[in-house]
Length: 160
Length: 160
Length: 160
Image (cartoon, rainbow over all chains, first blue to last red; front, side):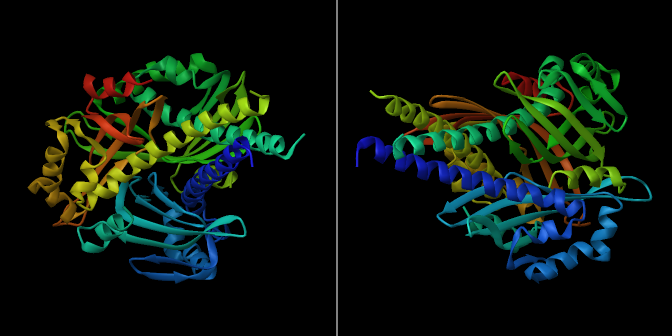
């Protein structure tokens, strides 16, 4: 192998890692638009078939349960009054075919009577990803409210 | 052509696509700082000469109309009381010399009497870009309030 | 030197610049999770040994003073009631071994009595970075409240 070949091999690995980071960033950035427009299959398709979305009120297992959340009376009421599931730029740790992303999110809801918007909650998020058949998918997302309790802070500190 | 040459050609395309994504990300990230500091020419310069910024209250056509919005009494009142035109990480679809980005935004305004900040609105944004003379420019940005109506949700679902 | 060697050299520089941008993005994205989970050493470790964090109430010089802020009664009260130091996507200007990033941030606080969240402030941020022994570190971060005054707007306009 010549020096040039070595350099090209190294560069290919570096470019792959950059592509992985931007693919994960783009995946996370699609969650809010999908969930706030009620596209249940787009939301659930971000996860693996048996992926887990674990929130304060319980854990959803697999795509069917995640889609049920999007179709739920509660969520439909949010998006038909005006809602923003807002995600902040994630900190990403990449390790070959898996990755962890950590970020804050904010839920903004509009009161349909008054038209007033309010910050309903802020949440600590941990996303775990695997590369499956060349595509990044969420295997597990954990969200815990930042209400001063240990769990929310624990999510934020776990990945750093 | 040798295998190494082929690899280098492929790598060059991949690096270009990464640069394009980060250039678009950086462009979007400059909108808020420019508009909240009242730099009308910096704001309008993100668009092509005849670019369109289409918002709930009507569409601005071309840089002069976009600059007029920045100079408007309304906008000047916002930035001299304290305002944040806050953009969330965009989902980007890249297709050669054009691209579409989709993101939420949030307008936070400060009440000059009380000093209290409030979320004035959340908005669904669709940005369309073209590469013009090697530089990415906005050809059209559409923003629609997320108030439970079809238009806001439609913007969010259109690009996914 | 052959043409292929030249191409590889150019590509290596371009890949380095992309890695630098993502490293800076990732560094900024770790601030919020670190500060909201009270990890003082992780927060201060983002800065150089003698780095400066200059905020409205005064400037912290060096890691010890930054850690003291995290340990302060005020900050501990925030994170034990529920707080989000939320950072928006930064505009980054890269110049070899130094860089400047500009972004908005938002402080959301939860009232421990009522459980209500509010936007306590929005802030204009300028981050200055240096590459030290191959690693990006903050040499100076300046934050000024966006309250309609000149300083906040000045931070936003300075980097564009």
